Every structure is written in structure tokens, then in C-alpha cells.
Amino acid sequence: MAPILEARHLSKRFRIPSVKRSTVREHVLGMLRPSSTEELVVLDDVSFSVERGETLGIMGRNGCGKSTLLKILSGIYMPDTGEVIARGPITPILELGVGWNPELDAIDNILLLGSVMGMSLKELRQATDEILAFAELERFANMKLQHYSSGMASRLAYAVAFRAVREILILDEIFAVGDAGFRERCESRFRELHSSGHTAIVVSHDPRTIKTFCDRALLVDRGHVVVQGDGLTVADAYTALLTHEPAAAAPTAALPEAVPAS
Image (cartoon, rainbow, N blue to C red; front, side, top):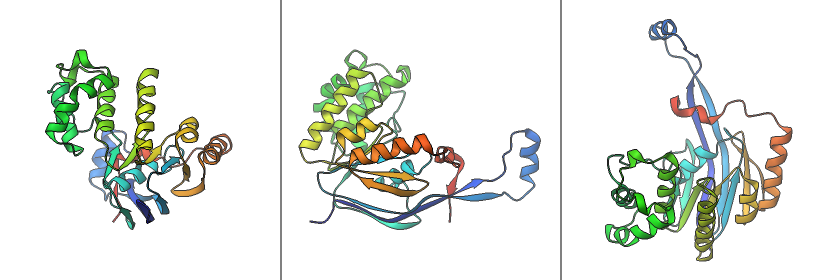
């Protein structure tokens, strides 16, 4: 049987400003000069596959290309070269809370975000109490989200996403939100989904998460897959990389100002 998801020779570049402008004078003079950019290679010929029902972990230092890879797998970015073949619907749980309407209360935002994730309004109305209970926000169901703390909004977003799961999950630091009780509920829900046959790609900096939940894992560094193996092997390789190697020189965390290279 063919893998449920394949990444074939993915590459992605961005153009970033090569001149830093920190004063008004520099900005004014910069308007009179041709803009100068440099090319940043974020991913370079990345290939892997994921089998049905498998949980694949991805580790790597900040700036190694993990977030860009997830966005390509989720269809948010297009690769410069290569292709992604998905043989099942994908639920990306990445930058949760994007799409919230702060003027609406929690219940209306559950309907809004859940419908974006593919649930029907009937399904969402039936699941609203369960979602609020999972996030421990029953008391705040009718409060506008503009009055929520960032932690409350994150818990609500994860609760909706875990209820809207389709066949393939893409999870970014899924067990790093909320207090110990909420993280335990997230872990329990993930185990249920794994047991029911869902496929998952889990990105985490936490070696315990990769060792505990992943059947197989990849270590990404400077845009390349440098280690493949079981969760224990990759988690140990990641720890060794942090211990012995210098930090990446060009972190992709600085990419909001960047534009895709043409």
C-alpha cells in the first residue's frame, strides 16, 4: 500500500533584506536606492514518506526549516521544487488562533474555526460543550475573545482542532500549551487518535515527546534531513546537536519580512 503522505525533493528559498535600516535617515535614503536582498535557502531537497497510522516526529533547532516544511505539507506554502502527495485529508494544528474574531464569544468562535477546519455547523453545535470542557472554559463561554488571555485562547483553539481531526494530523509543539492538566488531556486525546488509526506528523523540541509518541523521526538541520531513525535515536541526535554545534546562522524565525524567491 502506498504511503499516506510523501514529500518528494522539497526545496524552498526566501529573499530577505540584506541591509538593515534602523534610523529614519536610513529609511529615507533607502527609498532612493534600489532595494537589496539576499537569498536564504530554507529547505534543500527534503524527501520522506509517512505510512498510514504512523506517527512521524520532526526535530531541529530554531531556524532549521521545520515551520516552513509544515506549511508546505499543509498547503500554506508552495515549494520552489518538489511535490507533496497526500492520500488523505489533512488537519494542520499550527498557528492556532489565526482566524479568531475577538469581537465574538467563545461559542461563536468555535463555530467559526471549526467550520474552517471542515466540521459542519451541526457537528460543531453538538460538540460545543465537549470542546469547552476540554479547554476548561465553560464559565467563559459567553465572554468575547478579546478578553481572553493568550493561554485561554490557545486552549480553546487546541480543543477545537482536536475535535475537528481528519485523517492526517500535522501538529506543531502540541504538548507545550497550558498547564500540566491540559497537557495530560492533550496527550490522552492524541493516544486515542493514534489508536483509532490516524496518521500524525509531530514537531517538537521536547525529546520526551518524540521518544514517547513517535514511531519514527527525522532530524532537520540547515534545511536538510540529517538523521532518520526511531524516536530515541533522533531525540538523542538532537540533544547532541544542541550540545556540540553552534546555533544556526540564519534563523527562519526572522522570515515575516521575507518573500518567496522567484
